[in-house]
Length: 421
Image (cartoon, rainbow, N blue to C red; front, side, top):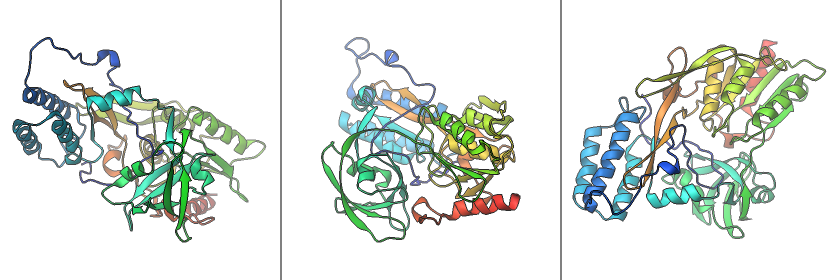
């Protein structure tokens, strides 16, 4: 069954906050209309109607409702009783927010009406921060892990780089109970400063001051030929961007111009999917045939199959995929599908299994919830959402443990390609 304990999974942020949903999002024109007409309800009755609507969506649509280790009846009784005691509107909103902690981690989130309106009207093309993509590591000391930085950002100018760790923010340590919410303390208006205790792997901690700026969120693929080999290496960024697939194709073309590509390494260790991540297009490059299926709680299924295209030896080149605890979403499906079809070997750490997609639902009080409604299974029945991607070669090396010129996961990939030659 889906892990139900609160796990502190790494996520992809740029020191900003955004919510996204998959198909099923109700447009603003379909928003419930508020007014002084129709039946009049007391505050408690209105809260009860809102909670009942929320609960109906959970019971009918939550993908793991039947298998999650949750006493649903007891939870419903507890929340209903607290509403019946009498709550102010502010207390009711807090109670709905509290539900997030009582449901399986990552399965549910709640926005009050005011928060929803603020999110819907916010300009998401820019944000204010330091310009870093981050994850969270609970062990041994809780800290933020830098997955990558935006070129030209305050983070890069301050010397922060991928694999670094942040242990303190303005003199206060990153706390276990904060998780990734600790990045909220790094955010702030452009022109203001934040002091960070940062450590680069293999070096002592240092204190730096970073001046925040207004930034545009951008991703960038990294690709190069590994010196002294015929192998190509492609590192996928933490976020999707419009030209991602084009850059992959250009990299493959460069690897095969006037030479043979002996092996290809796709590094997905910090890759997370967003809307438009080119899953099917990438599968088409490296596979031909069935892949698996998306399904919901009613066992409605959408089969995924691709018609392969051999571009720049993509269908035949020996393929290694690197994964880790920050690999999430469609990149997990890409890795697991190619592994299941014997197209690629997987090296690294087990992934979190964050392949569920979310749908948003409006509630009678104008608030909105986001709920995991679909998951993915392989043709053999394996549920990535339950187990994550299981590497062929397990190497528990975190992104914050990689030293310059000493990446044990990459070295293992090179050795495996060498053995296959």
